[in-house]
Length: 299
Image 1 (cartoon, helix red, strand yellow):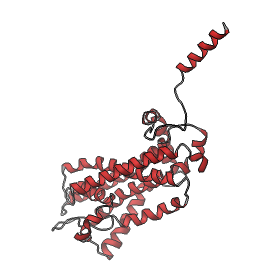
Image 2 (tube, one colour; image 1 turned 45 degrees about the horizontal axis):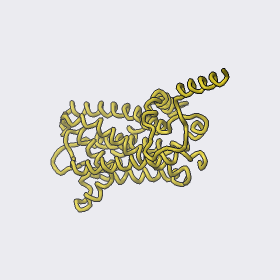
Image 3 (cartoon, one colour; image 1 turned 60 degrees about the horizontal axis):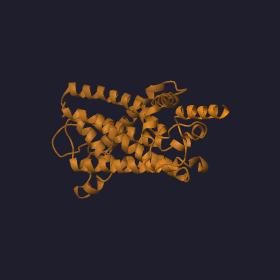
């Protein structure tokens, strides 16, 4: 009788057993289905990250508007009025509002850089909770990317107001075209690229903390290697192929192309950027999957 009860108990335990936690799994076993099951946790982390970002600030989420607005004003004065750098991506006689040009570039770059910076600290930032509570580790970088998107949506709404102002005012080359529907694709492109680089950095910094110190400095240098403060016409034609190897450049120029209704768009360069982004993302996922098994021993 005792044996029968014991066997029955073991069978019932196996039937209700849902999660098996182990450090041994295949290289490409990324737990994507399990990550989707934790979507409620992703939502909670997004809410927590956004609230923590503006906690104990007087203006709160208004900083999401103030920061890019002030940056755009500085760029307009310094690069537009003083340095007089071109805001043209293509040759031709047309009028682009410099203020809107710089705002467009800053918002696009701002989302990419903030997402990369947030995901690059995945293991270091969440090491306490990861060491005590189990959840799929991909939840953290996904939540970081979506929490940064809230600020991007607010900033995009602000830019849309200025876009409508210049469109109604007239005297510019701005056009309403179906290219506006490219924007969601470009946002997804930025997420893939930023999260890919971010989780690579987060994986490496578990052993080499020096890299975490260089992220902010490296992003600032990277900004000036992208057409944010100047138009593409400033780049000599003989260096254009090399310049377009920067995967962020086609995203920014295509973003302006979609917003203004005209500008620079090269399908082959954009496809190259997409391919590079996917490669970076896949490398990041594989590296992230390997590091997550042992990072608590080294962090």
